[in-house]
Length: 306
Image (cartoon, rainbow, N blue to C red; front, side):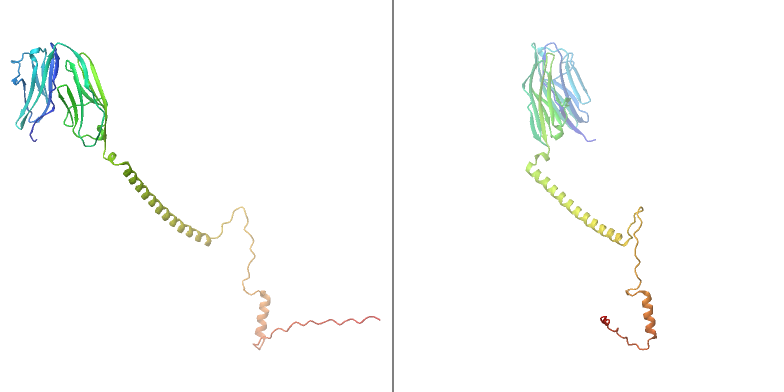
């Protein structure tokens, strides 16, 4: 595995503690090989010998220092240092011990905002309280853990959530809860991350949609014309078959009686035609005699009776 210098995925946060209560510093560290961790107060190495009762641990990347019972003498700047063969990193915070108490209070609340996809987003709040409140960030009710993508940092009373590269799925309701042994306070805001398609002007989007609709309409017209062409050819073939076939007969009606047609094209009856043929064969002359004209003969006028 490639070596990696130590980095703080969650740095130390300053603490305001009530005298006689416990004070805890915690940081999350990554790196390979696993770094060696040391603690300092105002530049001096901390250990059970220099600070009686102090508890120091480092496990699974979590470095923790706990002072079970603080006094005003314990106030100061606390530093954790992580070192391995690839490099070194440090984080520093302050411890303020006070005799008074105060519930958490937001001097700067979360602000709703809109950002574009791929941009960095920073959500800030300022919280005061004695003892120092425990501050946690949430999205849609789910606690956000500090990581390279979602960094939670503290600078005095300023607490920040930094989204390195925002995406539409990061949109939602963000809230901050600040709690100490005196009370609790919450601040909520909305974050909207616009995707790339939402950044296109509405007019251009409408033009693209209209062009697509025109293309679909043209395609539909071509398909209808093609279907109509094939339907016409199919209808012609069906009509030709029907004309060549015999007309269907209904089972409950007798077929109409048809008068038989003469086989000869001549209007002359068959008997007369046979006699004419025999007369032609018996006649020696091939010359045909034209029929004599019809004469109208008057009947004799009767004489008057005397």
